[in-house]
Image 1 (cartoon, one colour):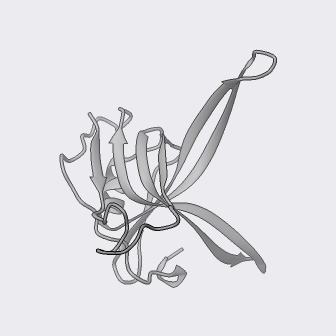
Image 2 (spheres, one colour):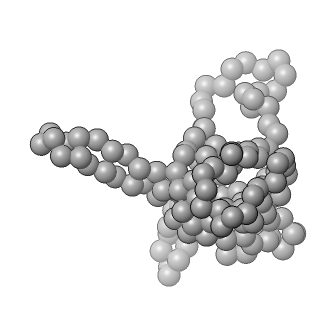
Length: 155
């Protein structure tokens, strides 16, 4: 049984009466968690959950041998949905994630670094591997905080 949670947004992201946007930033992933989710709270009390999601691609090479590649994606979830992810998702559990790509810059050991993440708006808990716990039947997330910068993230 799959249980899905989503954040309410305008389907197109457009204001009433505006013309169609010239770009799209939308990511859809189906994969397995590589680790248990980590839930933290900003100083303002907003929940934020981080986990990695593995997606596999398989194909046959020129030699006819089966090839496999795994891509690891960093997922960030905000609000009530973040708390639900922390409660019901575990390492190895399958999940469907929809969201948008975001790249942030930070400094570590004096070097400028970049991290590309998926900011999730929808997470659907799939498959077993949930430790025998059942997910709640319904739920909505709160919208991500407005103006939440790296200063609000406690890590």
